[in-house]
Image (cartoon, rainbow, N blue to C red; front, side):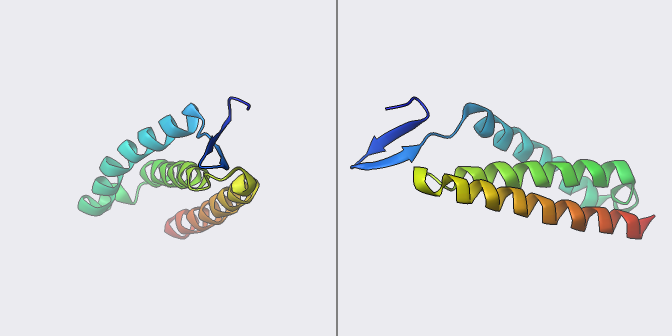
Amino acid sequence: MPASSREVFGREFRRTPVWVWWVQRLSGLALGPLVAIHALAPEMGRQSWVLALLLVSIVVHGYSGLRRIAPAANHASKATFLAWSWSAVVVVAGILVMAGLS
């Protein structure tokens, strides 16, 4: 059995890569203060660098979360496709929001 998968109750599962786990945790920690700045300091929340950091944090956190929800090995490619699709939609929406504020 390869190191990237394991078998539990007769079903094969992929292990979550350590880098995905760390990225999920760190982006989640970054989201708290960024959302607080965006909500509690409206003038600062409209600045492009705050919006860019918030957008990057949302995309990274969502991508890593979607990668982690597909534990079955036969659904891993579907989850990867879903994660990339979700990330693309959020990036496009974020760019449109940032362009509208300029």
